[in-house]
Image 1 (cartoon, one colour):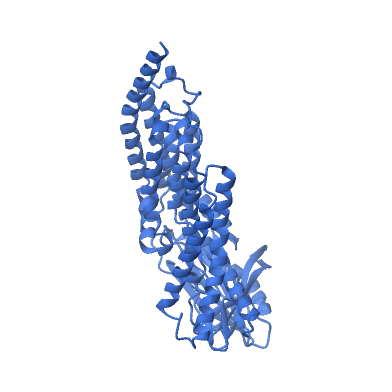
Image 2: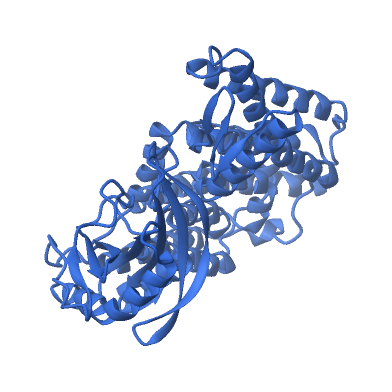
Length: 517
């Protein structure tokens, strides 16, 4: 009798899977179509960036990992989960916020999360638990890591300079640039090691899952996959500078610079995997029995499976539908910022420096001018953005005061300070820049979003999402003040005086520009 009951259970399960797999495939296709712009944006980044090219192989690896689990999953009974629908709605709201604030990483994580949560939403949590690693591995397809680049560059520069000085080579350093007796060097994005780090974490996590069965060993190897490439990148940068120095700059200064870097990284990874393989766990864990939460008699009916699939698609589509309703494409095109009113005590003048321009790409309109008072000159730059999207937006890692590969200007110091502006206390970012002709600037920077001032990237994104949710559009701007040091007066004092006088005219000009929508 038990044998007959088990046989009937297996037949029922087979029938369930024959029905649910085509249905689930349609759900996945629907989600891909609903978030097609997000997924196509991810693929575009994979295609143009070597750092994220691994995204092309994440999906095939995920499918292979799922295939390895097919026998275990086949013993489970598919059944839609109501709790997963709630999580799906939360992730959908996160996508909406990311879309409104033009936060690529948030929309991409949420879109991938929709695919992942479709499994418990349509097939149930027991199936999702059985495929947990396979599904979570899919998140490695999200091109995330640029946020760590500035800090990794700072660390690489500091450790390279430390190593050079430790070996007796004199170094004069300013920011990410340094000079040694044989020549000058600079740490740029390619030197940050972020691509090594991302590749190491992705491959290391997969290796840990396939090689070990204990959670402790898996965690330890993933930690090693994070720490080892960071330290290896410091050694790589130091070795390249030393090769260039000892060869009188005949080696490691051109294409071979990149070749040496990848060769060294490859050797380090091989060594890490060889060491990790010495503690591999070849014994298999005990096979998983049928999940007790879903007994054979509790198989979902056909109508329930259809309802589960339909509800999943409808919930997933809610965010894009709301976003389309709030779309700001009806706004008037913008070609210029409203003119500034007279700034009390200050007169228009030539720019404080002729060859510096903040790196804010994609602005709908820009204003770059300068004002003079009693021989003191303050520069003003405003970059105004409207109808932002994933390729053209205000707050992004590619926008800033100076590009790391700028041959004329370098940032030598930075921080934050409080000022009084537009009748409120405001904390702004400040930086010191040095030019090729030894010109020096002190720069203040902050944002304006829907009448609010902030220097925080996170708050700027939040204010932008709130403004769009309220139907006010995404008009926003970056405001930058700067003054040269060679004026006989401290640059900070010049900026304080100019900011106090220019606050009202700047605020009024931005509000008038926004009203032109």
